[in-house]
Each structure stands twice: as structure tokens, then as C-alpha cells.
Image (cartoon, rainbow, N blue to C red; front, side, top):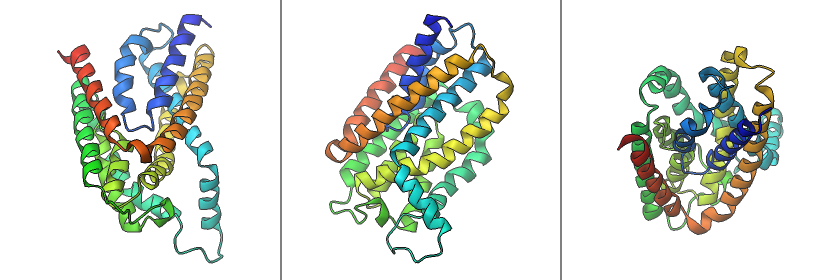
Length: 275
């Protein structure tokens, strides 16, 4: 295992872990580091490189499961139990209702998105538009949230957040940025919107990642495995840090600082890849 390649995959794991669930667009960051680090590694062909991205994304997903392990345990237990449940409690049906719009549109337009929307120009547009939505959410939010915790979310709110999540099918828009902004605009507390966003991310991202891994299974090799493992572990650890830090500060700083960062990132994408 070459130390230079190992450093590269660790950096990619760090970028994935730090940006996947923060509202700053992991896609935008990966585009910037992609040519600089990933495809410059001789052992990574295009297909193996794409598989590597899926592996490190799974590391980030596992971090969410770890942080919200008690919540997921309660969701599973409540689904399997026939005992009466509290009126106000996040249920699996909330997750299903929230995921449905994006799943339907994602499957319908998957080929179009892959072929036409993954470019520096489209990601830059997504970064800018997503920033405007986040700033609007800060300015127009409910002063007294109707849903102070994730257990107070209604089915209608879950569905409406799911509709807003569809904007994130445009690369660079940021799924977490869209759903947290949508939740806040619909009367959720910042922390409730963030909790719902992270919990809702697990099934859709896990499902997409597993399907991608099955599709690209033939590109795994003994040579690449140590790098895959290093990227996975790095993404898991840094996603763990990122999620916990974000959940601690989101109610204090709101979304505006992240929106400004996204605009700066869009400027960087323009300067490096477009101008």
C-alpha cells in the first residue's frame, strides 16, 4: 500500500465525512477534490473510483446510525409492537411519507440527472440556489416553532419536507440544506428539522449505496481493499464529529453562516472550473 495513495483516500474520507450531512453540499466539495486527488491515483480506474465514493458514503451513513441508535431502536420496536404508542412520537410512517416524493422523482429522472446535471456549472447553480433557500428559512422562520422536537412533527410536515427535499436531486443544492430549511419554514425547531433530516437520510442513502455497490461489485479488488477500508473508517469518524458538532450549534448559529460558506464555495467552483 503506497503512502501517497493512502493519504489521498484519507483526505477524501475526511471531506465526505465532514460535508455529507452539513448543509454545505458534499457534492460541491467532492467535485473540487475529485480531479485533484481521486482520479490522479493510478490504482483507481473510473469505475473503481466511483465505487470508492459509495464506500466512503456508507461510512458517513453508519455514523448517523451510531449517533441516533436509540431513535432507530425505538422506531423498529414501535413498528413491531402492538402495544399502544404515544400520540406524539416519530414513527416509521413519518420517514416513509418524507422519502416518497424524492424516491419517485429520483427513480424517474435518475438517468437524466446522471447524464446532464453532474457538472461544475450545475453544482455551482445548486450551491447558490440552496443558499438563497437557507437564508429565506432564517428570515421567514416561525418565531415560536409548532414542532419543538422531532416527535412533534406531523405527517403533513413530513410530506412537505419530502417535497422540498426534491430540490436536492439537483447536485449541489444539498439534501440536508433543503430539508432543514424546509422544516424550519414549515414550523419545525432547527434541531427537530436537523434530527428528521439525518434520520430520513439513512434509508434512502443506504438503499442507493447498496444498489450501487451491487452494480459495481466486480470492481472490488484485493489491491484496492485497504484504501476502501481506510476511506470508510475516516468518513465514519469525521462524519461522527461533524454530526455531533452540527447538532450542538445549529440552534445557536442557524443556517446563515452555512449559506455564506456555500456562496464562497460556489465562487471557488466558478474560478477553478468555469472561468
